Structures are given as structure tokens and as C-alpha cells.
Length: 260
Image (cartoon, rainbow, N blue to C red):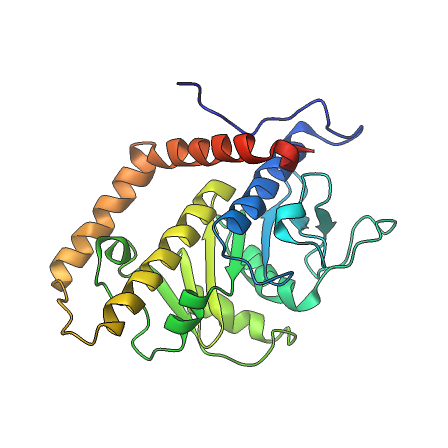
């Protein structure tokens, strides 16, 4: 079986490094995948990635575009304050969106990619006092790996960034209370995998709770063990790379224009 990978193509603009083009292709793929799996909120929320070898530079979606329209070349380069680096570009950038993302990028050197969503399941669980419960194997993968941030209103206040940083800590997942989900990753593939599975864990929890039946809660020891096993399987055994390659093969069959 041929393994698909996001690699620089002949469409790379003159003067752009191969490293930047590669992450552009990966981030565009992430946007298309989130659209495919119906995790978008029209034109709102964001996925961002750090530009290689350019400190304080990030890529974000052009505000107003549907996520299934986004391509590698359409992504907008911005600075840590959300200002466009390429002033001649006509696309807008949503300042509320990057307030949250910039906090994480600034504080976490391992957070190359940050994804924020407003899915139905994610918002519903964010409104539950108990948050995400270790009810299923998928949820237990994130036991002890989820932070919580209290809702403070639409994210326009830069002072909120310090509290977001503190609440996320070193975890890969942050549940924004009464708001939605946020995940981080050392790569686009890692951040997307976290978002896909945390959102699925939220969906399954809500389905179980909706039955009204008593919930079978695994022991703390089991939940902790599953978390350790997940880390080994996803990263040490290379499963994450296989998972991402499978996603790219799907996109290439459906619409490879994300690479443009």
C-alpha cells in the first residue's frame, strides 16, 4: 500500500521555503478534514500552525471562507498579535479567533498546531459541570490530559491569554467552558487526531447520558492505564503517522485541491 504524505509540490510560490509550503499543505488538509467530518461552525473557529524557521509567524484561515474551500496558498500569514504579515493580501483575519490561539502558541513551544471547534457535542460537554467523563476507551485515552477554562465572553480581551495558558498547562486538550474544544499538537496530524477523538468521546458521552440509564464508570486505575497505553500506541508505535496518511489518501480521492 502506498502511504500518502503531504509534500512540497510544483505549485509552491517563488520565494517560499519548502518547509513553509509543507505545513501549508498539512494545515489546508486539516481544514478540509474538519469540514469532511462536519466539525465546522460555518466560517468561525480556526486551525493555526507555526511557520517553520520564522519565529512569531503563524498561518490561519482567511476569514469568511468555508473550510472546504481552503487551500495551501490561501492561508494567511500573521504575527503573534494577529496582524497580517503580507499587507497586500485582501483576506481578513478574525481577531477574536487568534486571541486564543496566540496564547497557546506563545506559551507552548511544543504547540506547533492549535485547533479550536464549536461542535454540538463539544459545546454540550463544555456546559456540563462534570466535563468529559472517562466512560469509554476513547475518553479514557485523555484521562488527566484535559484542562478547563472558565467562560469570560467572546475572546477579544488579550488579558485572557494568561488564564488560558494557565488552564491548559502542559495538556493536549482544553475544554473552553460554555464554548467548545481546543487541542494542540507538535504537528498538524497530532492536533487533528486529538480533536477528532475528543469530539467523538463527547458525542458518545452525550449518547450514553441521554439513555437515562446508570453509567458504568471504570476505575481510576484503569483510566490512568489506558492513558499511558494510548501514548505508547499513538506515538511510540507510529500509529499517528499511519492515521494521518490514511486521511490524506481520503482527501486525495475526494478533492486534492487543498494542495494548491
